[in-house]
Length: 284
Ligand SMILES: NC(=O)c1ccc[n+]([C@@H]2O[C@H](COP(=O)([O-])OP(=O)(O)OC[C@H]3O[C@@H](n4cnc5c(N)ncnc54)[C@H](OP(=O)(O)O)[C@@H]3O)[C@@H](O)[C@H]2O)c1
Image (cartoon, rainbow, N blue to C red; front, side, top):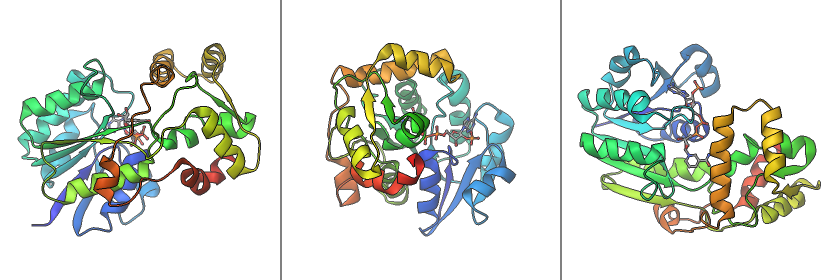
């Protein structure tokens, strides 16, 4: 039977790449998006877009009607799992979804307070077969959240001290996601996805400097981070989440390296240097 797969977060970092890779497979892909006409322009005219909003139950029946698998991305702004994510999961179960692949967070199984942990437990409770992709910190945060700092001030600004992070490229996460969606044998499994190396932000700044040919320095000041993020208009709750994430790195808790990515891809995960070379135009 041909797989029919609904991809949530389809315009985001990981979802966009998952859609692109699924289009190369023998399956039917549906991009679950909030604004089909404009999102089709982002995703390409060959992508079938279905209206879907986690916060609008009227969109659920149609979105889940044709599909048997779900790639689940929790939008970062939706932190209340019971109110904002669970209703869509209930609808997915009712519609007969057979497998959910969920983009989770490294260590979610140990941090019951993060939304990803609550979502994992909710899916288990629903009894829908699932695969949890517990991912380390995305390399692509550098060309999204931190892009302007790097580009305009030559500065990597984050309060991560001298701690190491096992960055992963979202292209590797998407490749793993596609494999686990298409192949049998990944149900009831959780994978800890990291890159192959753990680096400090001093080391990342050196790689940016060497590849971009312009000086990029790392500034670990918490005070400057708060001032800068506040003045750029980011909401305080988002800033606090970022501080918590960088504190994890500062305390040396973000450097775990696993072999899951390599085993699932049958190749080495991408390196930060490779990522910076591929994305150089973002910072020049
Ligand atoms: N960044 C990291 O280092 C990291 C590491 C591990 C795990 N994660 C997790 O990865 C997830 C984010 O993945 P990402 O970076 O690929 O996403 P992203 O680039 O932040 O994009 C968010 C996606 O969610 C969609 N969305 C927002 N609100 C929605 C709603 N109400 N209903 C339906 N869709 C909605 C957005 O669509 P629109 O285009 O309509 O806005 C967009 O496609 C988060 O759960 C995060 O915690 C992140």
